[in-house]
Length: 373
Image (cartoon, rainbow, N blue to C red; front, side, top):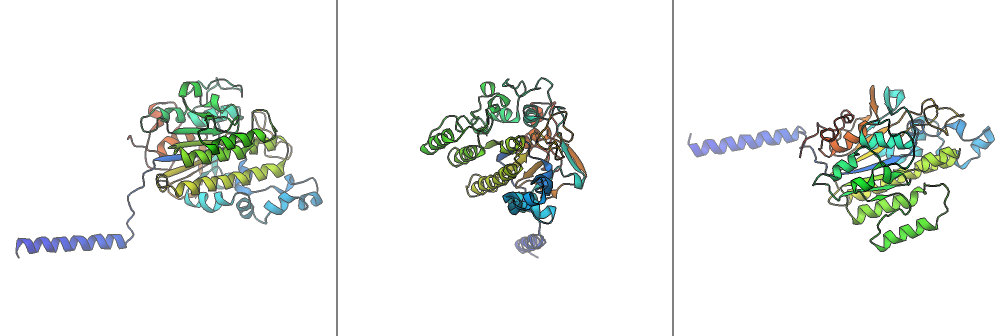
C-alpha cells in the first residue's frame, strides 16, 4: 500500500466518522453570551407568577368577582392556564427555553436574606450580591456597595456600554450613579440625556402623564426608553426596573396589579424579540428576570411587604439564554436574591466575586463555570 493511498484512506475514514458523529446528534460548541438584558418587576408575588390570578382577590363576592374585567381576562380553570393567561410569553418561551427559580410547589425556594423585605435593601442585595445592614431604608443614600452593573462598567469590554432605566427615582442611588458613572434613568425623565427626536418625544410624553405616585412614574415611558436605547445605543448590559406591580398592589388594586404584570410580560417579549432581530444580539444575549421582594400571602396582607409581613421574603428569578440549559422550573433547590449579581456576570463569562468576594455565588446550573476573558 503506497503512502499517498494510505493517507487518502485515513482521510476518508475520518470523514466518515465525522458524518456518523453529526448524524448521532453531537452537540455544537456552546454559544458565547456577549450581552445581557436584566428586567425586574418590583414586588411581583410568586403566587401570581406560578399560579396566576387568585380568585378571592378579584372581588368581595361572587357577583363582583365574575363581573370583573380582570376575571374575564385572567381567570382560567387551572393554575397552569391562569399563569399562562397572565404572563403568556414568560410561560411559553422563557420557562420553556430557560430556567425558573422560586416555585414552592416544586420544592424551589427563593428569598432575600436582608431581613427587611422591602425595595432598596432588596435591589442592593440583588445587584451587589450582599445583604448590607447599612442599607436599611428607601432613603436616597448612595449605595456603599459596588453593584455588578458598576463592576462590569469598570471592565474594558463593557465600559460605557451599561445602561439602566428605572420606574423609581431611587435607582440612581442604588447604582450609585455619581461614583459608578452609570447613566441612570430614574423616570424623571425616563431618558436621562436624550439624543434623538424619539428620546425627546418619550420624555415629553412622560411629562404629560398624570403623577400618580411620588417618585414612581408609570412603566410605559420606562419601557419605551429602554427599547429606544436598545435600538439606537446598543448597550451590552441593559437593566430595566419596572415598578407598577408594587405600586398598584399598595393601592389594593388587584385588577391593575394583574394588568401591570401582563404588560410587563408584553414588554419582555418586545425587548427579547427586538434583540433577536439585531445581528449583534441574536444568539449572543442572555435574559434575567427577577423581583426585589415578595408580599403578604393572604387577603389581609397581600398589599404589603416588609419584615413584619409573613412570606414577604419570598422571591423568584428566571434566566434564559444560549448558554443556559433549558431546565424549566427548577425543583428541590433553594436560592437567594443575592445570587442574581454573580449570575449576571457569570452569564457573560465573568466572575463577579473576583471583585466582590463576599457576593453570593451564581445560581446553580444556569451556565458553565465563569471563565476569565
